[in-house]
Length: 202
Picture 1 (spheres, rainbow, N blue to C red):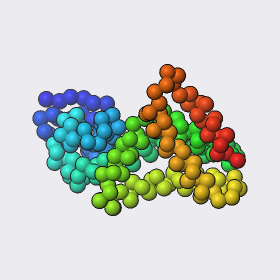
Picture 2 (tube, rainbow, N blue to C red):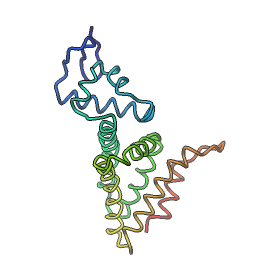
Picture 3 (cartoon, rainbow, N blue to C red):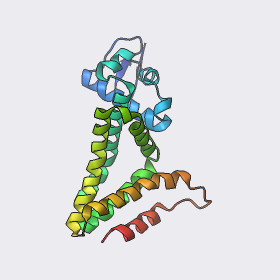
Picture 4 (cartoon, helix red, strand yellow):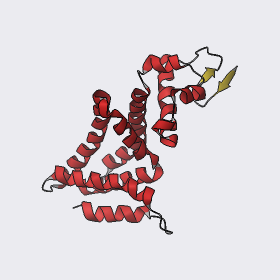
């Protein structure tokens, strides 16, 4: 018995018809979809296998554990979502324009994918005793910090690294702002972006 997905044709009876690279990519993509929609602790290897019609052995052929798979899917998913924003940032003219786009893109990421930050925290917490993979995930976060630092350097501000840290901390706090806001009037993302630009762009 077979069913078709948007990405591959899978044999539910157990025969494997995906190419090896396609298999790994589909596992990572489906894992990311489930993790951001349901949370780390509510997703199981079984649920991923069930959706793809594959065995646990296929997953553990590529990943040592659920945590390893979560790290890989977080890096893959974040980079895929952030890539078009990064292109927009790079395409801007002046350093100030790039920094403005960096802020606006970050706010847009939070509003379009509000559960992404929650998944990031879950991976971080789960990885406290798994130094290697935790550091791999944190390197992606540091890349984000380094980009902000570079933009501040190009703007010619004093202490660009310190400015970048405060900016990133403020952007991270947006996830709690959006989750916790219970006012009748929903947050205006354009207004939030404008306020951040006013505060953080020299």
